[in-house]
Length: 139
Image 1: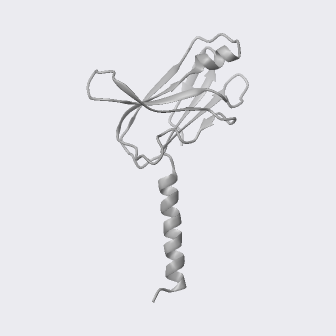
Image 2 (image 1 turned 90 degrees about the horizontal axis):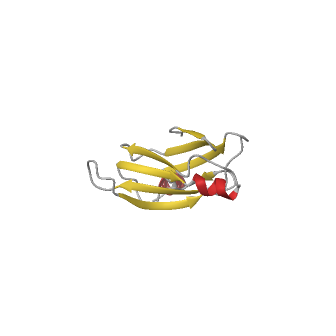
Image 3 (image 1 turned 90 degrees about the vertical axis):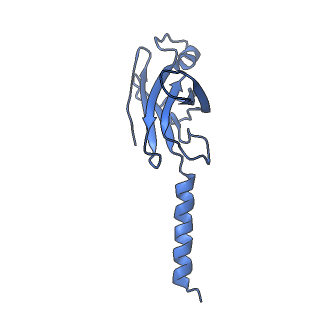
């Protein structure tokens, strides 16, 4: 006979399991260094390197546009487990500055990274100005 305690524990486990499956393994965030504000409306693509060695064959996996907070919270294809390998995020910053009618030195900013631990979340922030940028692995 199933007790109330067992049912509660099963529901809690199911809830936690669905949260773990729903959590996307990759997110991005862009902040404008001049204003200190989030950078909305920037197109960002995710690519995965195909093959080994010096071959530069990249396959696009996803694309999105930063929201009002300058974020894309689910950059990796939904309901797809992340695979180990080499990836590249490309921030289409030239399009953003063209909309602002502002000159920029970087029409796009590719950020290449390597994933070994597929059970972790990867967050890639971009600190952006028209003539410079900085990025790092966030959390």
